[in-house]
Image (cartoon, one colour):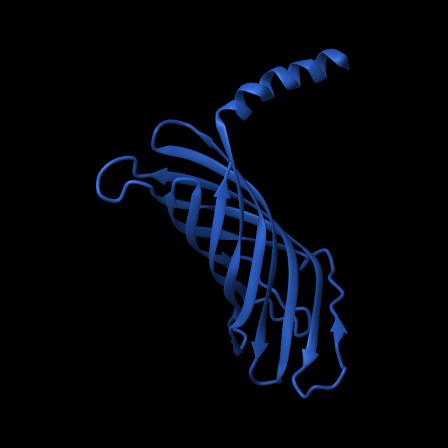
Amino acid sequence: MKKIFSLYLFLLIPVCLFSQIEVRGGLGSSTLTNYLASNRLSYHFGVMYGFNINDNFSMEPGLLFSKEGAHHAQYFYNLSLSYIELPVLAKYTISNGFIKGLSLKTGPYIAYAISGSRDNESGSSDKQNIKFDAENRIDLGMQFEVSYRIKKINIYTNYKKGLRGYDNYYEDRSAKISNLRFGVGYIF
């Protein structure tokens, strides 16, 4: 066991030496598509871990907490969902010229719902906790991001689109999470 642990540390040290850690957070606007829903304020925060493949390409896996939801226009309630999100983004960075520091990122994410609730807009205390089953607790999707780095500060906008249907009440499964986010990160 000591040998395996030592080998793991030996292989991990070079990766850590040539990587960057970004602590990030921001606000966004989320909704459920195909659900007669309007946007709702969302937020996220977490850590992205980047390692370079060459001067322009890198990979960025991450671990984020994301609070999302929607406002259902027809039935007058707010839906609130909390996720632990694991994105893996491929990143292309422009390394010279006028827009040096601009990055384009894309990749899949998997998210695990840790809580959810829906409440009535009437102001009553009819808040209902959502009971997730195994089928709708997991969200899979794609993310697209544009970011601009100024020294150790990273300013970004990110769009994520769920590919799995979500509906905990009506068995429709055509509603998919959509979230446009803006944020700032600090790179160590």
